[in-house]
Amino acid sequence: MQRRDERSRKSTARQRQRADTPIAGTARSALLWISLGLIAANVVIYAAVGRYGLIKYDDARYVADNAIVAAGLTWRGVVWAFTAGYASNWHPLTWLSHMLDVQLYGMHFGGHHLTNVVLHIANTLLLFGVFQRMTGATGRSGFVAALFAVHPLHVESVAWVAERKDVLSGLFWMLTLWTYVSYVRQPRWNRYVLVALCFVLGLLAKPMVVTLPFVLLLLDYWPLGRMTPDLGAGPDRAGVTPSSLQLRVALPLLREKLPLLALALASSVVTFVVQRQGGAVGGFDEYSFVHRVENALTSYVGYVWKMVWPARLGLFYPFPTSFAAWQVITAAVILIGASIVALRAARRHPYLLVGWLWYLGTLVPVIGLVQVGDQAMADRYTYIPLVGLFLIVAWGVPALVAGWLVCQRALEGLQRTALVTAAGVVIAALIVAARSQVRYWRDPIAMWQHTLQVTGENAFARNSLASFLIEAGRTAEAVPHLVEAVRIDPRFAGAYNNLGAALIQQGNGSEAIAHFAAAARLRPQYADAHYNLAMALARQGRLDHAIQELVEAVRLRPDQPMWHYRLARLYQENGNTELAVQHLERTLTLAPNDQAARRALQEMKSGGPQ
Image 1 (cartoon, rainbow, N blue to C red):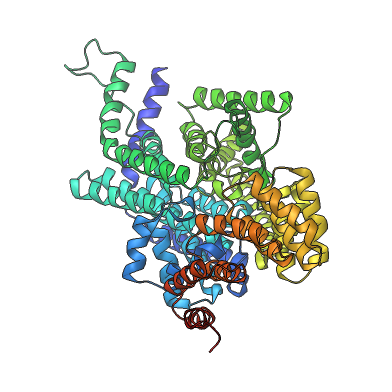
Image 2: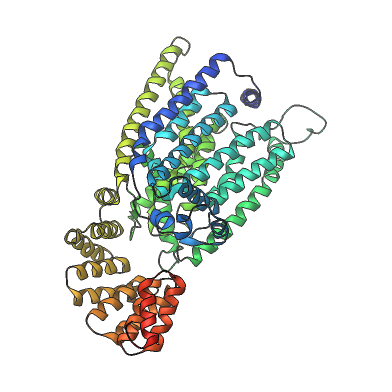
């Protein structure tokens, strides 16, 4: 045991010195070539996205349909970014980045995509640099960065404009790690302030960064070696047990993180309030706590499997109505077993514990214990967490191979060649898989068709596909998908609303009214359903009922000028000129250049057409 502790202390000392060790010319050359290779891999995978548009799932309301963002970078936009909880999110830095893109590229969305790619490349290089600085292991650090760069699970974060928050927060995550390494090397208050600043910017881009202080503590353990106590003799060591000495070393490191933990707590509270107010947080009546725990356990294992075998990746994975007992038990056994192995092996292989806890911990905000949205899991949630598993692979596989070799010196060259070859094969295979996955992001119909193929019974995907088919004029193809969506989920208000819209286009007004009414009944706050129901009723001459529904729609969404105009026309047709005038005036307040509303108002006030 003493020899093992001695080896551990020597290893820790070497790790502490690595950040200060000058880089030789050969090492600099290796750094350069690996960096160029990482850039090239990203370009090979993502070059095509410069020709892509929006898939119109979230990114339309984030950019194209968001009047404030579409105006570019303005002072009004800056104020809005920091004060609005739009789309059930508070990430002001992300909003500002979208505004800057509009300022630079306008509505040429290929530029917006390429910004994501540039940020992902920067994250890849920073990840490589951070672990190379901490460990001195250039090859293994490069492999971690390569896996991060090319893994198909990361395509969603890079190829989706709405997921700017992933790659942008990832940038400040990596910068926080970089500045933290500098702070550890020379602990000064100004360097700590820089760490905190990068952390705050990350929180302003995406609140999932709240787990970063926890990761810094893990890095203190390995590879920075700050949690290894000095077990040498001394007057202050008399009668002190190793465990109490370990605690004495760890407590200052924990206190060091308290300001960062306070910032994380504040961000968590703001995020929860905004998402709760926006209706994005599901209650226990919708998803019971037991159901959430079952989903969390199976999702943890599911993400690991997707990392190992990244096939059948879709945009939306529906929340299962139930879980088989064997699935939950198996997942729990795997997670507990892996945790025990990591703990028992921590002394000799600390990267196992650090990588495993990195993975488990950074997924906590999105694992579903606080359910946000209707998805069970999402590929984009793995953008940072998978780094922990990549560390285990990059350090664990060479250690495993070395353990198999009895005559290690004789076979050292063969071992290195085999590992490099295997790493190259893995990276090449992942590049091919990632390029294939990127192609589905070319348009929304392709994406939702693929998602349906890989996820089975998926009401959300069918409804989304149908809405884009309708938009493309392919209504006849859309109707069967919508019928299937309401069969799968009879409480899916959006599918009923879209089915009504499709039937209206096919001239089936009576059946459409029934579906619009079902959507409004299932979700009383669904303004679009009330509006569509009002218009369908008006076509049948049922003006009183139509006015009642449109009044409700306007109450729910008072910022829609066209709705006020339609309501004014219904009031006029029903003989209520006073209320018609009020809504025409409201229309012009919201849309001063609406000439149709201006002419109608002039006609009403003058008593007839001009």
